[in-house]
Image (tube, rainbow, N blue to C red; front, top):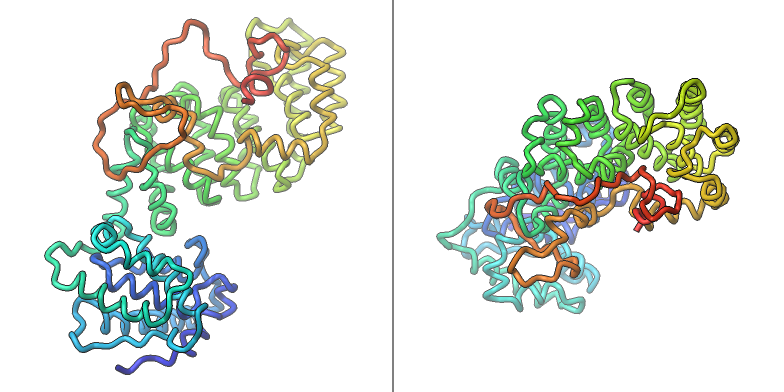
Length: 487
């Protein structure tokens, strides 16, 4: 069988446009083998990302021009089609495939096996029957010491296993992928849909534009998201935040302009726990629209705090300058100080000046600290929210200590999707009568499970709910988020 010289494809995969992130020749051949051998025809839109970015599957190549892009795609698809002609379902019985790892050494064999395993991971449910019937076959691919002869002999066996089966699946196109994920994410269900999250991670290039549309749809019409069982917007927000997808910045920020009662219905406690951190994670660097939203009189104090938390995280992480945040907080604080000096504080009122005192500690701002001390002297800061001793103690921390606390208390960027849902009562509490351990942290995995359990969105309390910025009920004088709420 005629094959394109491997050196041509090697040159393509090693091109500067791929920035050394691409698969090598052997990994690509392994991936292509898995794609053509499996029971499902998988669209290039699903697997190309892994060719460009072998570790994470989402960074796109930086081609110099359209000609270079077309040449690269042409070389890849020619190589893929040649492997399909040799191993695919329409291949002749006597068709042969000569992998490039022949005579290339153990590292080339290992790279080929890694490519095959990546292809299997793109559709793990499809390969489950083979894993159950012949686990030793896939185990051979996972062995670090697998020989070239072993792997080459395995390929015909895999082709024979799938050939002629009546249950070959339909192509995994973007639409099918979306419906599969929609079934897992749209409404609350137990257990946590870990397999769907893993699938979304693998297919992020295909999934991300769709999740962005979910955010935009909710900003235009939030009514579906006010249903207590509806969780699609939560998963969209957290996944895009985990991927640091800056395209989510504007639609996610638009949520802050919704009426507070609407946003509260949509997010519940995630308004305090997740929303600000998601904004920080997807920020595209332009903080002007955030500052404009913070200044808006129509924005609730609770929403304003979430927005400022996003900015604070960017500053502490070193991704935003401190001075613009200081300027905004000094402006807002001066406005509050003038009003509070003119008339007494209303009982249980949420004042910006109190939150600025906490933010001055969080970012280590000497400009803000000087003004906050003046406010303490004037009796303008509510010391049930943050007292002076605690303010000075927190302000004395080094930047490294602040950064370490931010990350260790899960108050920084979103990096783990499951961790962002672990505190939900519906996932952290054992189902009644199921015998599971609520503290074992095992969410389980499910894709497409039917709705069987309502989300526990309403909790009856004997006392009012404690907000993150309320005084801690222990009497320490600290904010709840800085005291017992930090744990």
